[in-house]
Length: 405
Figure (cartoon, rainbow, N blue to C red):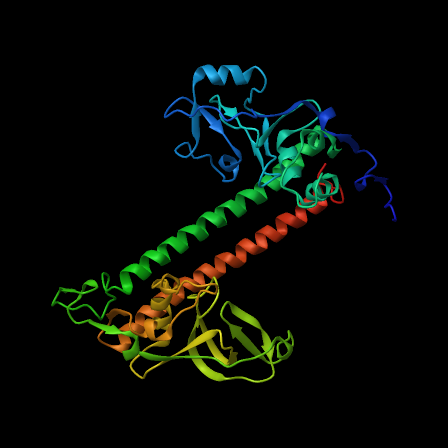
């Protein structure tokens, strides 16, 4: 492997000449795991953290377990987490880091390791970013005691090799990557909010609880077999709005990744083929398998396989509106239990729900929800880009290919 000028070859690849490389045990004053015994939980007391408690951005105190102060004091003799330490998941979902940023006392279970960095050698924020990197995952895979890595041993953690810039450069790297994390977190929050708003809008719009401008009716609401709906709406079966029919048989030999027409099966896109069965706007429902009942809106020329139910709208039905209705109906709940779960088309067609009195109102509802989907896709695109940028930054900064100091 060629080594760039100003860099040196090490066990973990090329790093700058002025960087060092050390095992993690040299850079920490302690690496230890939590108690190996399941404590007696209490309704109130001292928080007791497990691996599941550190997998979100914030720790939810309403979800964690508690132990007595006496048991906490006993456990603290061996393992005492403090502000500025780093928690690391070592069982189950491994390699998740969490800096202790809070002041309250707590104890930890064996599924977590506690790392106490030596402040004059290692910046805890730099270490956290290092544990988030693919670079570390490679070491985890290489040093694992078994093929499928579900547990980390303390000796493995102690042996992890860490590239060590100066503290000033560690801090600069950590700050840059932390800023990238903040952007990702803000986009994740925005995305969750937009999805929640859309779900609320679906519930209100397709039941008539909320009417769009131009479609409000002064007659009020009425009680029906499916609940309260607008006075001018009707309760109908799906059979009055569309017809449903399974697609055609096709073998995997006739599906590839380069032909002209998309081929859809029960779980969505299977690949591409050289002929099509439909041309236009339709909804597809997965007919068989664990994901039966999933709904997808499709348009243009495509091939529908026998595991997909093609929903063809009647003249008075807006297919985009009907697609949103079908998604909200959670059709999987109607699957018939067997070795291979499946949906009965006749059963689906007999399901009833509320129908706006005009196709124009159906279209207006679909357009509102479609606009929300477009906003969600835009945020998803930004989030995907931000994650890719962060991954690139980690690859460059944690190996010293790009220097900040």
